[in-house]
Length: 72
View 1 (spheres, helix red, strand yellow):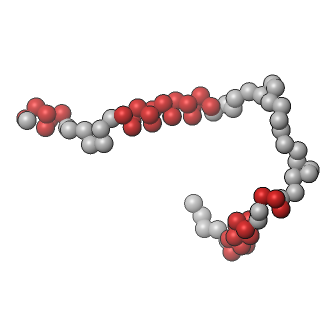
View 2 (view 1 turned 90 degrees about the vertical axis):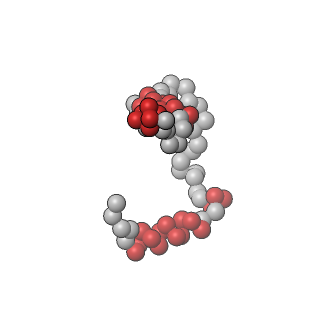
C-alpha cells in the first residue's frame, strides 16, 4: 500500500472533524425502497468465507500435532 500524500492526509483530518448534521445530502436522496435489488455478485463468496471463519473459531487455538498424540 502506498503512502498518503500530504493533501490526502489533510482531507482525511478535515473529514474526521465534520459532523453528520453538516453534510448536505439534498442532491443524494436516501434509498428507502429496495424492491428489485439483488445481492451483489460476491455475496456467496463472502458467505462461504464467514462460514469458514466460524469453523476456524470452533477449533482449539493450538491443536496437538498428530505425532505428539501417538507418542503420548
